[in-house]
Length: 380
Image (cartoon, rainbow, N blue to C red; front, side, top):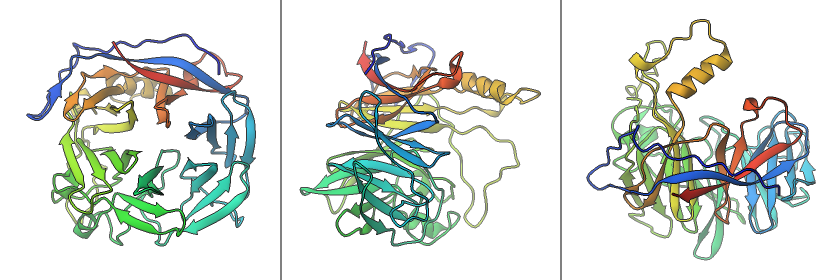
C-alpha cells in the first residue's frame, strides 16, 4: 500500500452547540480524521468498495456499469473477477445489493437470492429469498454482515424493507416491522428480527417512506441507527426478550421529517425544510462514528436560479455540510466536527480500519488509478 500525506482535520469546537438529553454527557475529547494509507487499483471503471477481508487483506469491489465484481489484494492487483450475465444460474441477479466475506468465501446478496462463491468466484451454493421483495432496492451499502450467535455464524441483512406484506402508509407495517433478517448460511432461512422500539419515531402514529438503517455487528450484538431518526439502538441477539435498547443522540441540530397520516401519501409539492439525515455509521475501536447532515430550514434553503448541477451541489454542501459525532461510551458523545471534503468513509473492517472513498470529482485531472484511503479516527 502506498503512503499518503497525513491529513488532519481539526474539529470545529465553537460553531456548533450540542443539546444532550438528561442521560447524555458531552466529552472534552476532540478528534481528527487522518489519511494514513491507501490502496490503488489499476482498473478502468468506477469502482465501489463492497467488503474487506481483514485477515487476508483482500478487497471486494463492484463496477456498477459493467455489473462486475473484482477481488484485489492490498497492492491493488486484481486476483479474480465475476461478470456472468444476470440470468446465469450462478449469478446473484441484476443487482449486487451487498456482499461480505465469510472465511474464504464471498457472499453476495442480490434482490431475490443469496449466492456464495469461493475467492475465485467459483459457485458454491445459493439460497432463494423466501418472500417477495418490497421497498427500495439499495446497493453498495454495508447491508450484509456476519454475526456469531452461540458459536454459529449467521448473517444479519437489511433487504430494503420489512417482510410483513403491508404498505408503508398502513399502521400494520409498523406494528409488524422487522429491521433485519437473520440468515442461516446452511439452511438459507430468513428469520425476521429487530422490531421497532416503542420510543421510535416510526411508532408514533405517522407513516414514513424509505426507512433505512445503518448498522455494525459485533459478535452477537447489532448496533444501528436509522437514517432519519435520532436514536442509537443496540440489539443483543443472544437475548430472547428485552434485547433491544435505545438512547438519544445529542445532535447539534437535526430537522426531522414529521411523516404523513396513515392511508395518505407524502406531499412532495409543498415546500418544506430539507430533513436531516444520517449518512454513515461505523464502530471503530469501541467507539461509534456517526456521519450526518443536519438539514436546512426553509428560510436558510437556497434557491436554484440558474445554477448548474455542480454549482447547486456545492452550494448545498456548504450550507448543509457533512458532520460527525463520536460516541465514546454509552451516553457519552464528542462535540460536533466537520467531515473532510476530499474523502468520505464507507467501510470499517475486522481490524477496526476505516476505509474511505476518494472524491475524484475534486481532482484537477482524471487519476490513473482508483484509490481508496485508510483513515484513522485520532483523539487530539
